[in-house]
Image 1 (tube, rainbow, N blue to C red):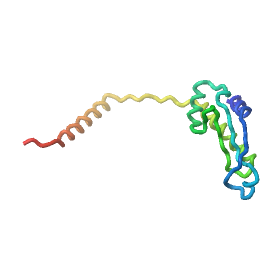
Image 2: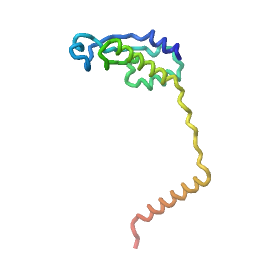
Image 3: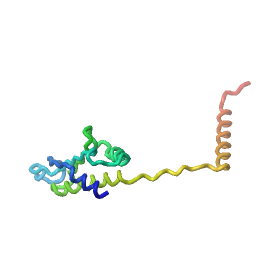
Image 4: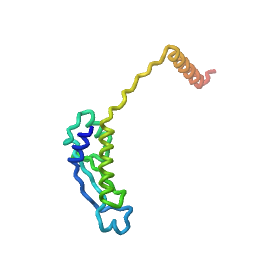
Amino acid sequence: MGDILDKANALAEESFIAASGPGGQNVNKVATAVQLRVNIYALGLPPRVFHRLKDLAGNRLNIAGEIVIDARNHRTQEANRREARERLAQLIEDALKEPKKRARTRVNRVGKTKRLASKKARGEKKALRGKIEM
């Protein structure tokens, strides 16, 4: 898991853009928002992890196959950079977790007969709602 995160951090491209939000006049002078881009094809993930990552990325995944993460909550570039990398790491960690397989449930004989009896009763109730014939 650590090697995939290291590879993602190595492949990540950062660009700094002007941000809105906290910072006062500093926001107008310094490009503090970070846009982090990672090409998911270059990560070399196993197919199942790759598909889970694509699903988790959602609209953060562009047509070129890059996950784009914008971080603009903090006043400094360094804090935004840290946040973007943490969000990328969390996304990859979530994709690496194998989902639990759902255990199929079975209804026992008593449960089946109860269900069928209630269906029959509902059907009879609805049948009585029809037109009355003279």
